[in-house]
Length: 344
Ligand code: 5HM
Picture 1 (tube, helix red, strand yellow):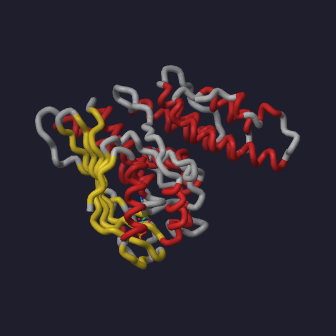
Picture 2: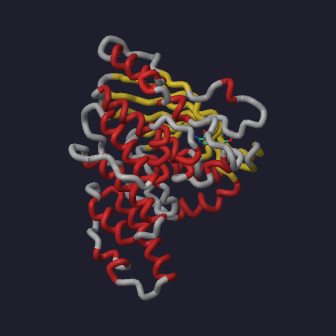
Picture 3: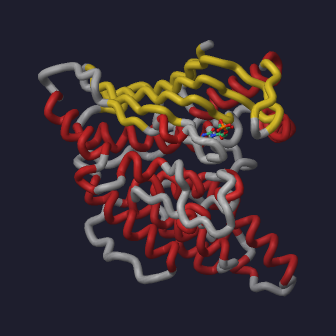
């Protein structure tokens, strides 16, 4: 079965609609679901990587998870900042410190010796002389299959295909939950695709996502129907990553992320492109939202350069203002009026 779409949102809607209509019933370890097997999803615009639908509002968790990968980390405390239920999901004990199936150490762990660093060296060497078929990063490993392991990676490989000035990416997955897993996986892998494309000075090509078992759990059916009922959303792409080698900016963002998460001073940002500054601002907005600090949230929102993230921020701002108003009805108007903030 094949799904062709321009954006993630288009693909998500199409897959869920068809799964609800004709998915085969299965009962795997994590509950009853509807499933399609051996599915290929092809996205022609991998930068349209987030679902704009307000109800899902998970953009900042997706950025947080992607940075967790890029940091090469498997620390649960780190990812729980963005996905509080991560530990429960991987069936880890309350005392566990690490996620055994984390993608970060497998892809980016070990600095210059990491799988991705070596893969980039190979890609650079072969660029221009051969259309390589060997640029594969492996995530799933046979050692993951052991009794009682609740964190068996769902992604098996990422294959980078530089062809005629474009960088295509083919991801293969053994298992993918369309409602909860698919949007995050597409977000992270297409972001990595764009990072690699910039490193090699290539255009971003097609993103192909092959899945052995693509499924929708019965417990998510109602939410999937709500999502579909929200109807057509104007497609939206993430701003283009700045041209040039991105890795010094990625290192800055990783340092900034850690500082924001841990509440310590952030690294100096002189010379950092607004694209990366905006990503750090979004992480700050999450912390300010959690701290119920609407005044500073509005300040950071007004510093944002790209209009693309506005709908996500407004969702957080409005929810926070509503909560504050419920607990403090005499709150000053500046904290409640969305009009006082720049409309992005
Ligand atoms: O029984 P299994 O190990 O496949 O359960 C893992 C569940 O998490 C599945 O529903 C799988 O599709 C989902 N999942 C996902 O969609 C998990 C991961 C983590 O590797 C992922 N995407 N990246």
